[in-house]
Length: 413
Image 1 (tube, rainbow, N blue to C red):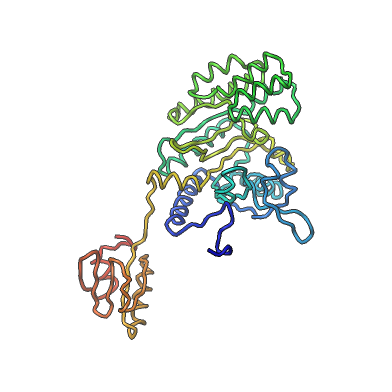
Image 2: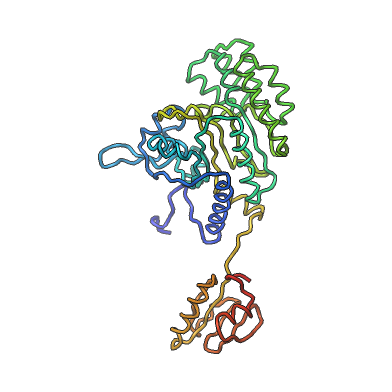
């Protein structure tokens, strides 16, 4: 195969069936999210590199796919959905005052490390951002909406892990570490690597009490009741206690709403802590090892754009959703009725008129000349006014007569 015919690493083609499934799932998700009051927006594919570097800790520069503009400035393909939306909102605050709930469907571009870079440098995401007043009710609604989005995509065995950024952050502040040391510790907690975490804390000369508490963080996951019991034992300061209290209240309210069986707790959920500032969550489907949805509250992010607001949101990884839906066969797409119109060359004008009329009724029509044998199991032989549908044959006089006899209603039977 010639090199020019090969795809670049980390991107894929989507053939008709998968693309139709993607469109159908996107439409379903948009319908669900719109019902909560979110309205669609779009940000550019290109942004300035400096936009992301001005927000510390949100994006590794090595992950960005960079280009040089005519004026010499560095551009990047959109590596994140939330930062550009915050930028957009800051530049049009009059619009935000009128509306503050946004829905996006977009592509994300990243240079990942390891195996994921070979499979996904470009991926699709559907998500929402709410620039709000940080009312606890908003956190509840966001989590409910995340669960319902997955449920109404036909998925089974949904599990949403809840975390609280403030719990770990408040404990980490007690350790007296540098910013770089905090990032390394955070990584080991996220990896649940207790051995390396213990070694590092000893190396950083963290006092024994704080060290022992930090080592427990990776194990604080599971059912809410058991995790809360253990978390209370290591809540050594006001910030930890307040964060835990907020999480307990959130879980109690979700239980009252009937979502208890979808919820588990993970206080070691500390990825992107520089991004999130309160409630955090990520959703899994049983049998699929990657999170399919990630989100949370990011009240500190907006200050970099001079926005006097808090914010919360989530993103759904659409490509992963497609993989799961195909495996579970849980989402049925509706296909319009299809029929072949076979005509002699001398009758092509009449055949085209019939085909156009059928298309106007919502039927998908393929045209064929009589010597073309590549037809399906639903065929109109125009010269004979004869129809064959799945082995049955009948004649018709008009398009309406055909639709009635074929049992088609608005292009479907």
